Image (cartoon, rainbow, N blue to C red; front, side):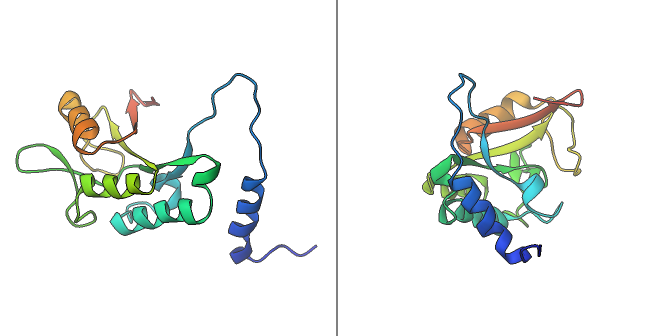
Length: 156
C-alpha cells in the first residue's frame, strides 16, 4: 500500500471530518478549532497566520461541522506604555481588537492564552497581579470567547 502524498492529507482529513457524527450521550462536545500552539511553529505566530487559519476553517468546511475557535496561544502579549496588555506591534500591527473582529466576522470565536505568572513560557507578558485588568481587556476590548490559562502548572 502506498501512503498518500502529504498534499492529499488535508483533503482526506476534511472528508473524514465531514462524515463524522457526534454521539448523543449527554456529554458536551469539546471545543473545536485551531490553536497557534499546534498550528504554527513556535514564536512565528503573527496576524497573517491567524487570519489565514480562520479563513481556512471556513473555506475548508470545518466551521460548518463545529470547529468554531481560533486560539492565540502565547507569543503575542506585550504591555503598552500604560501597562495594559496588548498584541505585539511587530507581529500584530492591526491590534488584537481588530484581529478579534476579523475572526468574529467569519462567524468564529476568538480566544487567547495567558498565565498566572509575569511571563509566559514563550517569554511574553502574562497576567500575574494584573488578572482583573487583563480580564477586562480580553472580554470588553478584544471580545474573546475563550481564555486559556495556566495556574500552578495546571491548565484551566
